[in-house]
Amino acid sequence: MSLSPADIAAIVEALHAAGWDQAVVQVGDVRIAVAHNGAPLASELGSQVPSLSPAGPVLPEDPSDFPVSNEAARGVPVLSPSVGIFWRSPEPGAAPFVDEGAHVNVGDIVGIVEVMKLMLNVSAPVAGVVGRIHVANGAEVSIDSPLLTIDPRATS
Amino acid sequence: MKRLFIANRGEIAVRIIRACFEEGIESVLGVSAADTDSLAARLADHVVLLGDAPAQASYLNVDKVVEAAVASHCDALHPGYGFLSERTTLVNACEGQGITFVGPPSLVMERSGDKLTARAAASSVGIPVGTGSAALQSVDDAISASRSLNYPLLLKASAGGGGKGMSIIRSEEELPAAFARSSSEAERSFGDGTVYLEPYIERARHVEVQILADKHGNVRHLGERDCSTQRRYQKIIEEAPAPGLSEDLLARMRQAAVDLATALGYIGAGTVEFLVDVERNTFIFLEVNARVQVEHPVTEAITGVDIVREQIRIARGEIISFLQSEIDVTGHAIECRINAEDPSRGFLPTPGTITQWTWPQTKGLRIDTFAFEGAVIPPYYDSLVAKVIVHAPTRREALDLIDRVLAKAVVRGISTTIPLHRAILNEAEFQKGPVTTKWLEETFLRNWSQSP
Image (cartoon, rainbow over all chains, first blue to last red; front, side, top):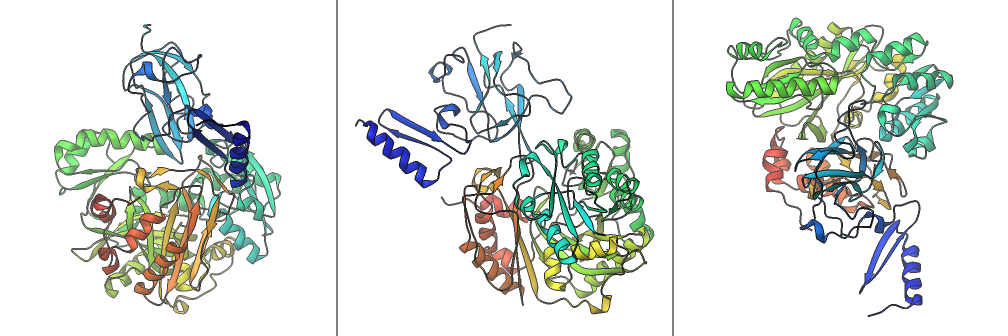
């Protein structure tokens, strides 16, 4: 099945009329992501359907299968377990759990996502070297937001 | 008192604004950047921005709160519950600026807030406190203290609250690890790692007595509440009066609360919490909460007393507006705390935007909330969205009414604990009579699976 520009316009119109802050519609291989009212664009949150695991980040079965942007191509993204606030250190003023370039083992805590007074530890799904940290300390994150990237092949 | 500063947010800020309105006092609300368009901000007479969204930068920042109260020319401050409500630094700062703090003076708050001091005060007026230990300095200290006590024991933080720093210990081998865990958690949460041992009652009910005390030495009680339905030491459902307890036991608990308030020189609204041993029909003193409680509406429902207005009057130096003999408990009240949490996903908090908020209207129903269609529930603060309170002639009728209310409620945009409440309310064991503090977690939730 294919979609004409008119179809897409109709879908976007319908979503807008329904009052959604954000929505993703997939028809065949066409994916339409819309957001308004300042909501983060769903397509920025990674293309996986958000699956929730309070215990830790979502880990792709095989890191090489994970669909990543060019920038994060070298590594496994660590995703936020919940909407909330990302903290890089255990408490205000303390040293961060990890910095870019740090070596981590599986299960090492790399950050905290705080949501409504609940502190969710975010741990490394793979061993490797911390690449980019995508989110600033204290910034709001959505569920499945990439927090940082770990390169499992690199050694420090 | 002309202008009152509200150092809080959410439903309790709305509740305090209502009391100001009724008392003819101007309300000034301090808000964080996340709450500038909250219901409380819309209802307050004036709004002052405290700071950024995280509580440390706004609602938990004593300097900013007091600065805002001074700058907005407030002559009084109400702290609500949580946040800075039991911080003596706030009480002292208000005093230093000539602002009337709606709550106990700092010395009384200090005496009430430290559990070991409060226990000693309770014991001195003959209130059973359970055989426990003094403050423990080390693991060795804890082990030697435990040898004169009976297991199971509860290790508790002296500065504690909300279950932080609490460990149940069933044998001596568990003590070293529990001691390390409890004292470090207490240190982290309260800046005070002092812990002590208390007997742990397996089948207990949490029963608390509401008190009011004015500056003229009058102390009154407003009966008791049962708050045994808890998850992780957080109350979920509260009711008043406490069902199924002997009149003699209740009378002794109410008197104990009044005696303790008198001994502490208490001023303002407060709650004296007790643990009732179901097997033995006895009680021990737990702690004093020197603030208005989340669950105060159930007491308001059965007594007709407006606790928040009474707090304001007491702060103004007035005499409590009623005599003890005028308090007549009528009917039964139940409160369900509706939290923005998803019970089917391990109670994960679900902040977000409320897209639909529909509730029935009926006699005997009160909803204390800051929610409305379009309201944003921010991720920065606790998950309480609404308190649904019903008042009916009997417990049976109250249970039936609140379940029917929850069945008609439609909330969209966030997940809530409404399905959990409905399941509890329909559970035979809960309907039959009072449950114990472990019932929800150890019996009910183990068997409950939410159908999709």
